[in-house]
Amino acid sequence: MELYLVFYSTHHLLRAEKALRGANLVCRLVPIPRQITSDCGMAVSFAEEDLERVQILLDRLGVAHSGIYRIGPEGVEKLR
Image (cartoon, rainbow, N blue to C red; front, side):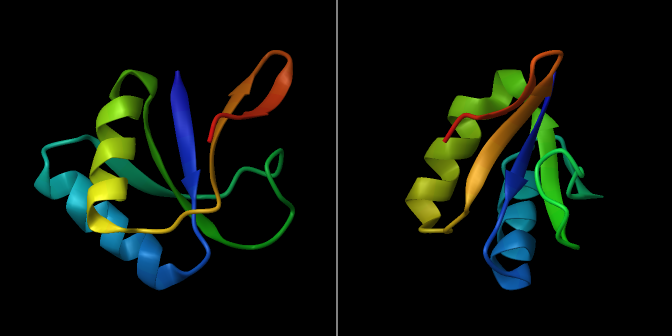
C-alpha cells in the first residue's frame, strides 16, 4: 500500500524527496489526495514497507512534516 507524506512547505517536500532518493528509497511527488485535504499541494508517496526507514531518515535530517497518511477502504488514517 502507498503512503503519503505531507509537508508544511515546498522546501521541506523537495528536501525530503532528495534525501529519500539518495537513500535508494522509491518515492514520487504526487498531488495531495483529496481524501487527505482539499488544499492544493504536493506530497511524497512511498511504499508502506519503507515507513520505518523514511521516518528515521526524516528525523535524522530534521525535516518537518505535517503527517504521514494511508488511504484504505475505511478512509484516511494518519499514521504519524
